[in-house]
Amino acid sequence: MSFSYDLKTEGNVQLVSLKGRILDRSEADKMLAETSKNIDDGKTDLIFNFEELDYMNSAGLNVLITLLTKSRNSYGDMVLYNLSDKVMNLLVTSKLQNIFKIVENEDAAREIVK
Image (cartoon, rainbow, N blue to C red; front, side, top):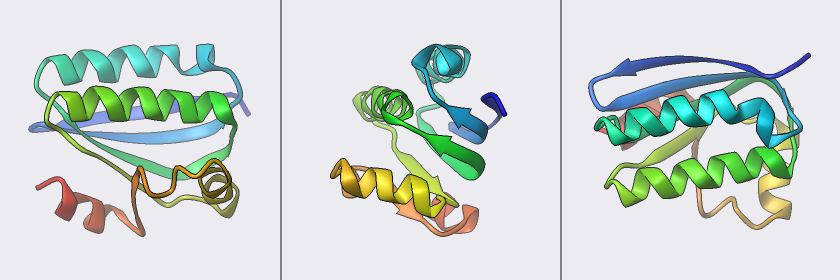
């Protein structure tokens, strides 16, 4: 399954649901451009739902780090939830689990970006 995403905005929060697999940065270019533009427009908080993301490699991590940096530079924040064991292991292996805010569900994520 190729990569796709759904993006909704609520106030200054972007809700991004990831689907499929991120194997190459170019697969996520459209999402990166859209979320970056929204950050520039004041929607600086990002909540990512990983429930339907089957797989992600270092290219996906690069996209997340880029958005985290852009969000924080704009005084926003980023929260990830519904991570699979595979994605969580990738974050742990790359020692990035403490860089990202990771929670169990959308309600917990919304509490952080209030």
